[in-house]
Image 1 (cartoon, helix red, strand yellow):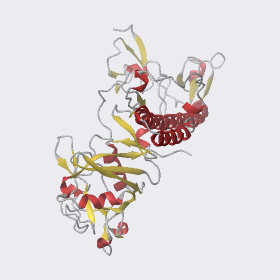
Image 2 (cartoon, rainbow, N blue to C red):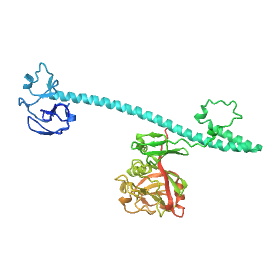
Image 3 (cartoon, rainbow, N blue to C red):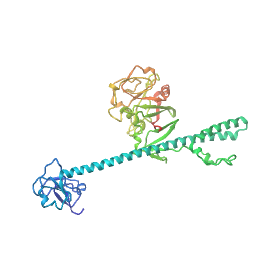
Image 4 (cartoon, rainbow, N blue to C red):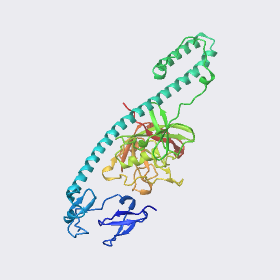
Length: 430
C-alpha cells in the first residue's frame, strides 16, 4: 500500500487514491468512471486533446490555456485566480502542444540518426569479426590437414631403408613446406630451427587432434555446426543445445544470413551410412517458396530436411522428388512452414536440367493439381527426359553436385537415399 496521492484523470480532474493497484476510478467532480493505469498516469498531467472542446470545471469557460508551472489546463478566468499570469507561465494550449511535439520529434530524430549510425558501425564490426572467424577456421582446417600429412610422412621416413623412398619423402616434405608457408600461423612463427635435426615431437604434439568446433547460435538458443567442404563453409541445420563443450558464436542475425538475392543451400545425400555427395542449390531468395525451402534446410523453426528420404518413382533421366520432413510430433509431413507459396500463373516455367521446382505429387512427374498438405514437395530436374514439361514454379537451381542426385537414382531403391545433412553455405566476404 502506497501513501495517498492525487492522480490526474482523463477528464481533467484530480482523484485521491491510496492503492496503486486500483485500475478503475470514478471522478469525484463529474462522476465519470475511468479505467486508468495508475502506475503510468500518477506522474502524468491531465489529458487535453485539441480535437475536443472541454469547459473549465471551475469557471465553465472553454479551456484554451495551459499552466506550465502547475501542469494543468486553464480557461481565461483562471488567469486571474488559480493561475495568475503575473506569477505563472500560462500559454495557449495550441502553443504548448506544438512545442512538445516539436521537441519530441527533434529528439526522436536525433536519436534515430544516432542509432542508425551505431547500427552501421556495429554491422561493420560484426563483418570484421565474422571475417576474422572465417579466416581462423580456414587456417585451422589447413593446419590440421598439414598435421595429418606430416603424421603420415614421419613413419615412412623412420622405416625407410633405401634412397628412393627417402627422396620421395623429401619431395613430399617440400610440398608440405610450400603449403605451410601460406598459413599465417606458420609463416609468422618465430620458432628457432637450431637443434631441430635430431629433435622429435612429444606425444602430446603427435596425438590425434580434431579441428576446433564452433557452433553458431541464434536468439532462440538453437545451435548449428560449422563445417568445411572444399572451399565452402557450411552452416548445418540447427538443433537443440549441444552436449559437447564447444564455443558458441551467438549470432542474433543468423536467421538473416540467407537474405542475399541468391542464397546457396546444400543437401548431403547418403545411402545407409555411406555419403554419396553434397548437392549445392542456389535459390531465388525473393520467392516465399525459396524462403520456405531455406527454413527447412536451416531448421530455423525446428523441423529440417535432415533424415528425410528421396521419394519413390524417380528416374535419372527426368527428375528426383523429395520434400518430406519430420514435424514436432515426430510424424512425416510435407505441409509448408510459410503460407502463400507461389504456384502457377506467372510462376509457371518450362522444365530444364538442374532446376529446383515445386511439385504436388510423390511421384517423379511434376504435373498434377496443387495440394496444400504437400506443398513442401519439390523436384530436381536431373536430365533431358523432363524437358518440354511445365513446372508450376521454379525457385532454385543446382549450382554443383547434380551428378550425386543422378547417382542416387541408380540405387535399387532410391527411397533409401536420405538427406544426412543440410544447411546454408555462408557467403564468402571479399
